[in-house]
Image (cartoon, rainbow, N blue to C red; front, side, top):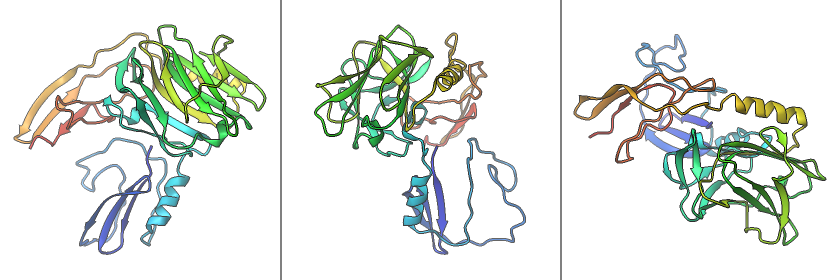
Length: 317
């Protein structure tokens, strides 16, 4: 999810994405009398857009850059210090994985090469073969061991997460032993002790322990081959047992029983010297929504994730 702000001051139109200026353009606008306000389509209903809208505000003044930055900061999940989902990433080598939680920052490669791939039915960050990713800011205060928190993650293989403890030379490490398929990990700290649940069941073989060999900041790495992470969320409160059960129920409802191959129902077809059209076939998948990703061999004209199975590539010029 992103915070988008479009500002026009009578001369310049500026587009901000998550509080950062993305584009600006000098414009002359001639506005007819406003008879209707359309969202998700053009005025003549000839084009429709895919996506979702959580809120909308319209001001009769041009907001300043400072005001927009403040709004974007307030837009983040107020309960999640970390919120990482692979759905926001492009396939290939990881450059940075933006945190959508209130702690800001990014996960970035620190050792080796972490890549986004399809792994066992999920889009995931492959951290096998010695790859490590680390948080490029200070580890969130919520993880300093003085207040409750909950870590929720989807992992494949042997995965380790470490983070330093404020005022000590020690670090905490959450170690998960792989079983050959995806697991949901929920590790809670109530202010006194840790409990770790694997696929909704309290597990004493996997959990959090103190270590003297911690990294400088929050770090994720693998302890073996074929290891990956598909999501990571850190909440500023401890999950109760009913919440753990509900979270696993929701997660298991999105698990795919068998892998489905992605195929076209309309092969890529040129409709002009610079435009090509294509369509993906309908597919039955677990979950409530299906998204599509069309890739080009050069990687320069990928569609990114879209809700429509139809895609038109305008970048062939």
